[in-house]
Length: 471
Image 1 (cartoon, rainbow, N blue to C red):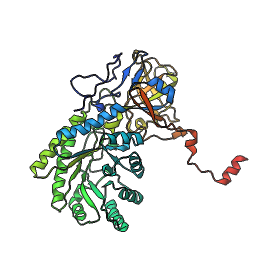
Image 2 (cartoon, one colour):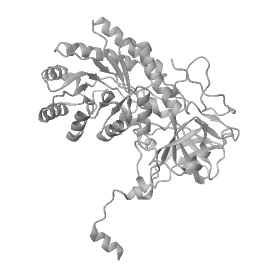
Image 3 (tube, rainbow, N blue to C red):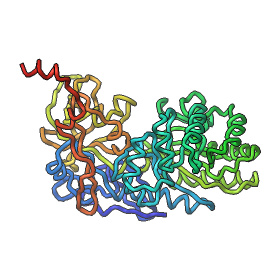
Image 4 (cartoon, one colour):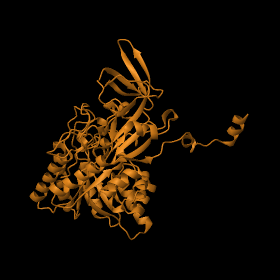
């Protein structure tokens, strides 16, 4: 397996730094800070060889900081674990909804991964990043006709979600009079429950995603008669931020049964996509399986089930998102004002909040934080980290343990690579932050900070209003 060990730290007093192990590889999803995180002689956090305080001085804040080594390590651990434990062909594809941008897509593609997209915009991003179309899988429960045409013309695999999409797709292919037959997979709901937030559970029966398992016979019968499409496999996904191992073992067994049923209708399905969902550490109490520990039982169950049913091993696909990218990134903020309410709480305000990280207000998500320029200072304060938006609910972290803070200190929130930038907004007309990729002491801009001009770029002001404004 892949072995990645961060360099020795000069100050090891901070509990959030990666734990160095000489015996086993560090699984990025089990760390709070990126794998390369250290503390320098100035007591400042260093990521990818770059001083975080210096990065903020150079690029401003809020600032997303992505550690290239951590991201690549996660990609390699997924890829190599499947090669090690699965005797058939495998393919890891990155669920780019976690963070879709050119640089992230290019990095994961360079490690041999494919890309899972859920919109025309994500498809365009992946193609522009140079991802091969045969490694792109297009998901979504309500793809537009324009998106389906784009997917067909791009020659990617379409993961069909429901009857309306399936029939629409067949009609589109026929109307195009194309000689090609688009590759499709069928997304099915497995009816498997897991313990996670109700908004990110997708495998139970009451879900907007996927064909109902009661429709299997009718579905396979219909697909077997459609010469316009090439059905290559089945897909299922049971949710996100999952720590349990048994649900994915159960899922793998159920999906092999689907392959067997499809064969009875003359369908030779050669691909099986078990989705993703492996959880990560957002706090020190989180205890997810490592990437290798997640991969191994899935491979074992599928191989055992196929052998028991005398089925050839399918191409095994998984689509991690959060566990690939989340722990490779932190967000750096500059501390501004503070408000102490005696016997109640102290608010410490930062220059970002719900527009660059909407997960706390949306999912009640919990994060951990450090002061990047005071890494070894004792934790003497319990404060609430407040965002700058005009919302009482714009609270990033409640009861954060910090050293004594001052205006201008750099606050770093950990594990912000998944669903932070991708769900960011311009609420209160705040511009979206910049993002930098750090490696070997070098920082490269991968997302420019939006300007005020960017905020009004798509605005349209009718001429009659322009006249009144000028008066």
